[in-house]
Image (tube, rainbow, N blue to C red; front, side, top):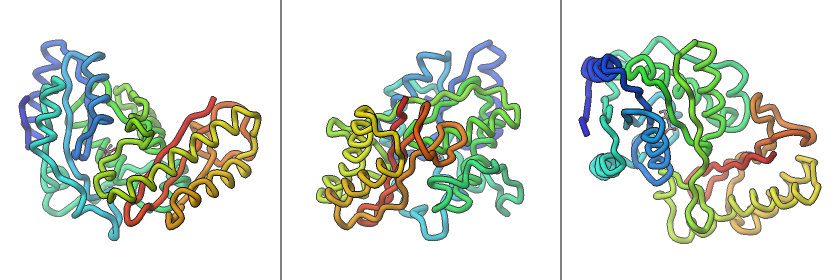
Length: 282
Ligand code: PAF
């Protein structure tokens, strides 16, 4: 696997693949890779001739009091995992390479969609995400790009940005990968102590409870979120619930009643670790 640190070299590599008529599947990541990321690489391999991944802890998507400096950086393990899955090239730029020494004056931001869920609690986060993903699309020039459903709001916003800016990139969103006990995989799970790791199961338990109540006929989001809140605080009494919401799958608007497809999403802080999870109910 080639490791590429400059935009110039990345462009040359991608141009060569395109000249050879190869299709490129792109998996953007912030590193600290786990089985969830690997499922994206496997999907990209199955659907394209070449897989290019990126590892870049993007400073512009972290708020001033968030975990940018302590975000796990595990480059050697990441390379090993990517190589094992047959990734062809890894783009590994520095912040200066991506944003220049003076930083960026240009931002890509999507209206409305960030005004829900995580966006309410992380101002400017999605602007940082869409800006860096737009830059990656310009640099890597992939045919398809792969994202995880765990960041549901991110996937909806990136889909919209890609359509609105006419990027010729197919956005593929892959299902959440969970531990055998149900905890959704996340790079941030490694912050959890053993006790917090157990308490974190309250998130998936509450989502399963909501799915069960829904399948028994409960269509009222207020009832579902109330039951979920009780369930989370039952399993993790000191958890700080940031939000529990039942939203439209495309607009992310909160629903008053569930008619078609809906997304139940939550963000909860366990100890000092902020975790998110969701389910799509049909
Ligand atoms: O989902 C992530 O890891 C990041 O938000 C992404 C898409 C790589 C952009 O930095």
